[in-house]
Length: 140
Image 1 (cartoon, helix red, strand yellow):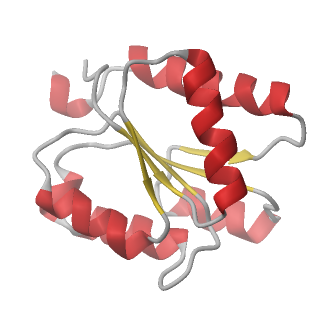
Image 2 (tube, rainbow, N blue to C red):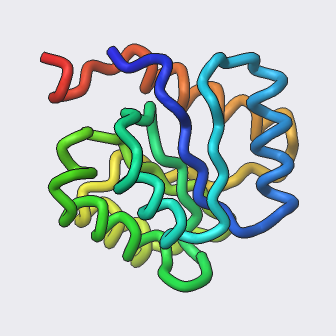
C-alpha cells in the first residue's frame, strides 16, 4: 500500500488551506501535504512527478478549471490515471446535482466541510485512515 505518498489538496481559499494544514499538523500524519490553489497547477504537478499520491482532496469551485474538470482530466490522462489516485471532493456547499455528477464521474468520495474545527479534523482523519488501509488496483 502507498501509505507514505503525498496528499494533494486542491483548494483556493486561504482560510480553508490553513484549516486543512492545521488539521494535518494535529493528526501528525507523515505524508507530505501539497497545496495547489487551482487545478491547472495540480495537474502540472501530477504530470511531472513520479510520486504516487495517497489521495487528492479537491474543492469543487476553483479558479481556471473547476474540480469536476480536474477530475475528468485526471481520468483521461493515462500517465496520471495509471497511478490509481483516489479523488475526493471536499467542499462547502454541495447540492444534489453536483454530488450525482461527481459519482457518475467515478469520484471516490464526496464530503462537506464541517463548520466546527473538531468535526473538520474528525472528517479528515476518517478520510486519511480509510485510504491508508485500502488496497488500490496498482498494488495487487
